[in-house]
Amino acid sequence: MSRPLILVTNDDGIMSPGIRKLIKIMNSFGDVIVVAPNSPQSGKSHAITIEGGIKCTKVIIDDGPQIEYSCSGTPVDCVKLAVYKLLERKPDLCVSGINHGSNSSVNVIYSGTMAAAIEGYIEGVPSIGFSLLDFSKDADFSEVDKYIKYITTVVLNNFDNKNICLNVNIPKRLKNISIKGIKVCRQAYANWAERYEEKIDENGVKTYWLTGEFINFDSGKDTDEWYLKNHFITIVPIQVDLTNHNNLPLLNKLILNE
Amino acid sequence: MSRPLILVTNDDGIMSPGIRKLIKIMNSFGDVIVVAPNSPQSGKSHAITIEGGIKCTKVIIDDGPQIEYSCSGTPVDCVKLAVYKLLERKPDLCVSGINHGSNSSVNVIYSGTMAAAIEGYIEGVPSIGFSLLDFSKDADFSEVDKYIKYITTVVLNNFDNKNICLNVNIPKRLKNISIKGIKVCRQAYANWAERYEEKIDENGVKTYWLTGEFINFDSGKDTDEWYLKNHFITIVPIQVDLTNHNNLPLLNKLILNE
Image 1 (cartoon, each protein chain N blue to C red):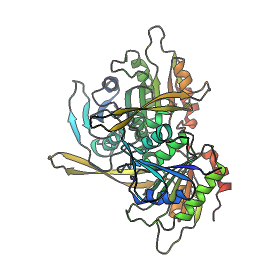
Image 2: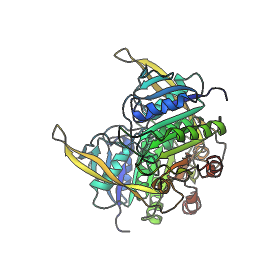
Image 3: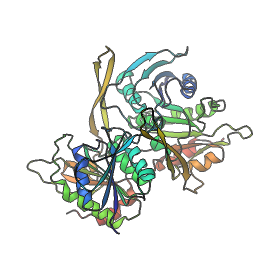
Image 4: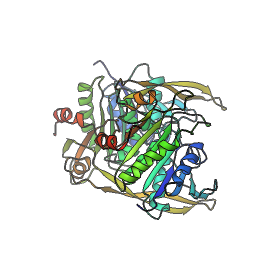
């Protein structure tokens, strides 16, 4: 492949440390176009803007060679706008992140970061979402370079113009424990047990604030949750057929084609 | 089962004709609690509100026996708030819709209606999303009653407290063609070829408006797209493991556990 065209986006917004780091890494691989939200879009999942217009402005944020657009839409809007409007050709790679926080297990469903990568995949662009298990604005990205470079190289070398989408999660940097390696694995079966805090807003109206606790129901040792707990980077390949194929025979028996 | 507790929601908003119809139908099955968005939330997918509070108000919209809450959040917020805050016990069924427009094939990924049903499923509640292939506010719901009742009965009778999520799409009412029956099938492989219309807003700023064309890449005769085209109601059972299990062996070869 000649110098690849790489689309970079995220859900934490174009100014977040995670995407600034990812842009720097991607500049070493190819021509980088950033199309990212102008404000935080965490938890926006695969939302698209259909009841209004999206604003999109060319911006210069630092002195790298990348070209950058700041957009008023969701992460998925950014990818669609890039592919269908802003870019002259289909990118060779779409990377999203580095997210501040985990997108392992069921989080993939809620994540704007992963939705952007999944949208790239739907559009036929090899795509990777990167997430670091550290919500802090000052998250330590110092160990991530070589792993992100390695995974990006594998995708560019083996999936040129092929359908692939990877959900990559990186353990939080701990003082005494290094990352042990990379594991390809499946999404753990887990959930959030939610609580809602009640607060009174400035107009005296009661509001409910989401908070919750992640619960892993999956004791499998082949899951992202297991490997992350054991200090491995996890790679879960992603697909978008939501059909529950296991349910088809039973439902075919129950539903009469009247 | 004694009289079931049924949670009703949607993405078109609590005042839309589709949900008013669905509430009426569900009143014949059990005790109905409506927790639905106070404004249109189409295309909101699995988005959740994490950077603010949700307002939620008890409302009376018509003279049915149902209890109704109008919420400022997304469809998924409505389901979470219902299950974790508003309801005294876990509902026996969660129904979402009737959506004005198709949620077949890849649309399931973008749909707020289906995201609400999927959230119900994630929370362990048997769930059904209903959609009519008619965007009109005056959509003709006259044929849908018996089919929605039939599918609801099948779920209540066979999946009490079991994991099930159904994506039900109903063909548009045509003058000379009746619905031919119900088919259990898989999600077609399809996509949207997007276009963006450029408009100048009231401040003179360029905005991009999403519009697109649905493209079905799937020639299979066992898909929702095929059956809808042939005037059948389609039922696609849904699951939320996005792992691309087919990719695992190849990736395991390519990724060295260094």
